[in-house]
Image 1 (tube, one colour):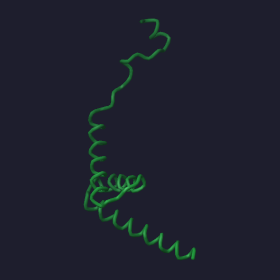
Image 2: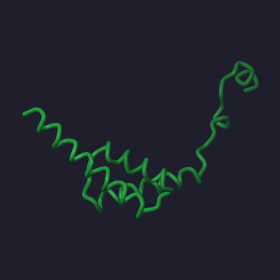
Image 3: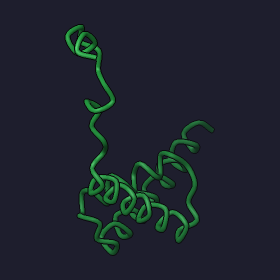
Image 4: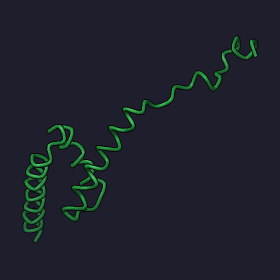
Length: 88
């Protein structure tokens, strides 16, 4: 056993376990994001990333996140319509 430690082989004790606080935070943020996605009937990873970014930016204030999300989605739809009109 002492030889393994001298050779630099890591033992199971050296592996740090994730902090329960960090895991709890990620569960809460995932729950927050999933709740908003379900409420607004959204799907997709890009929208999930957008909601997560907005949530972190506004400290998980649901009202602010929802307002900014709605504005972003309106802008996205408007940009899609404008770009499709230029193609015709």
